[in-house]
Image 1 (cartoon, rainbow, N blue to C red):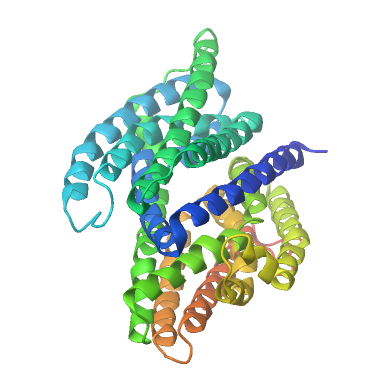
Image 2 (cartoon, rainbow, N blue to C red):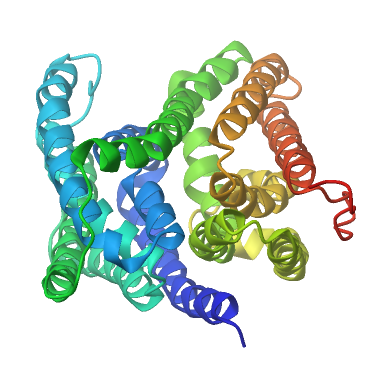
Length: 442
C-alpha cells in the first residue's frame, strides 16, 4: 500500500470518529439553542471562520506545498521566516479586527464577550497554521488526524459537561457554545505547537541551507495570498448567504423569526447531516496537496493522472452510497435534531449539493497543487454569482421558497464541479475519461 493511501486511510478513520462527535455536538446545540438559536449560531460561524482564515493567511497550504517540493535542508529556515511572518500578520490584523467588531451592527444581538472570543482566535490561528502546514508537508498525518479529533472531543466534552449541570438563557447558551469552540481550538494549538517545537529543535541540530527572508516570503506569499483571497471570498459568501436566504424567504412571505428558523433547519440540521461523509473528501484534500505538488514539480504527469483517477474513484465509491442513505433515511436522521418534516425535505432536495461537493473538495486541492489558485478563484466567483442569483430569484417565489433556494445551491455546485474538472484535465493533458496523456502534450 503506497503512502498516499496509508495517509488517506488514517485521516479517514480518525475523521470518521471526529464527525461522529461533531454530530453529537450539533445535537446538543440543537437541543440547547432551539431552532432560532441554532440559526443564530450558524449565522455567526462564517464570521468566526473568516477571522480564522485571515489570521492563518492560508500558511498551511503554502508551507505544505513548499516542504513537499523542496529538500529537507531548506525547511528549518523557511519555518523560522514563516513564524516571523505569522507574528507580523497577527499584529497587523488584530487592531483592525478589534475596530470592525466594535461596530454594533456586526455582532448585534450577540453577547458582548463574543467579540473577545474572536480576537483570541487570531493568535491561535496564526501560529497553529505553521505547525499544521509543516506536518502536512512531511506527511506526518498522524499528528494532523489526532489534532482534528482532539478539537472535536474537547468541544463535545465542554458542551456536555456544562449543559448537563447548568441551565442558561438562550443568549448565554449561545456564548457558551462559541466558547467551547474557541477552547477546542486553543487545546489543539497547544498540542500542535508543542510537537512543532520538538521538530524545530531536531532540525536545528542538522545541516541546514540558508534562506533569505525575501525568498521565503516570496515563496510563501505566492501561494498564501491567492489562496487566502479564495478562502476569504468563500468565507464572505458564506457570511452573506444567511442574510440572502432570510431576505428571499421574507420576500416569499415568511416572517423574520420563521425565516431564521428555516435557515437553522437548513444549515444546522440538513447540511450537518449531508456533509457528514465530507470528512473523507477533506482527508483526500490534505493528502493531495503535497502529493500533487511533488508530482507536478517533478513533471510526473503519469503520477498526476493516477492521483486524479484514484481520488475520483474513491469519491464515487463513497459518495453515491452516502447520498442514497441520506435520501432514504432523511426522516429518522433529521428527527435526532428536531421533530420537523421540513428539515427532512430539505435534506432530500440537497443530495446533488452534497454529492458534487464531495468531488469539489479534492479537486480544489488538486488545483492548488498544480499552482492554479487563480483558476480556482475564478471558478468560485462564477459559481457563487450563478448560485446566489438563482437562490434569490427562485427562493423569493412564494410557491418555491426554501425549495427554490436549494435549487439555486444545487446549480452553483454543479457548475463549480464541472469547471474544476475540465481545467484539471486540460492542465495535465488528459481526456475527461481520465485516459493516458497524449504523446504531443508535453
